[in-house]
View 1 (cartoon, rainbow, N blue to C red):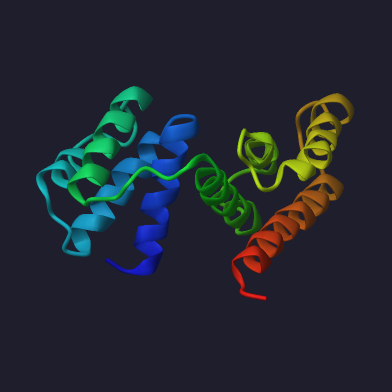
View 2 (view 1 turned 135 degrees about the horizontal axis):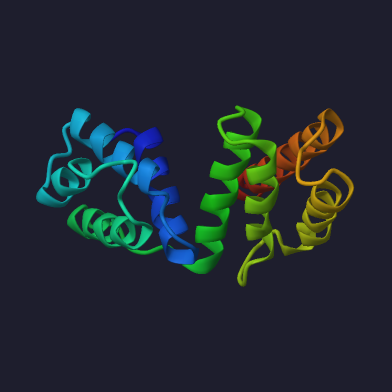
Length: 164
C-alpha cells in the first residue's frame, strides 16, 4: 500500500475514533485499497457497501474491521488530532470541502490531547465570523483567512515532525 493510501486510511481511522468516519470516504477508500491489491475480507465487505446509504456507525464498525485486518493500531489522541487536522487542511486548500464545512471541522484543534490547542481561539473567531457576520455562507475574505489558517496548521505540523 502506498503512503498516500495509508495516510487516507489513518485519517479515516482517526476520524472514526474522535467523531465518525465519513461513510462515502470509507467506502471509496476500501475500493481504492482493492485496486491497490489489498483485498482482505473486511476490505471487500466495506467496498461492497453503498457510499450513499451506509450509516456512520456501520462505517465505523467496518472501518475498524479493515484496520484490524491490516494490523493498524488505533492512534493516540494527539496523533488522531494531527491526522484529522492535516486531512481537513488539505481538503480546505484543494477545495474538496466547502469553506463552511472546513471551518467547523478545524475545531479538532481544540480536542483533548491536541498539539494545536493554542489555535482554538483563531478557529473560533473564523467560525463566529462565518455564522454571526456572514449567516453561514463564506465570502472570499473568510475563504482567504481559512486558507491561511490551513497553511499555518500544516506548516506547524510539518515543522513539528522535522528534526531540529
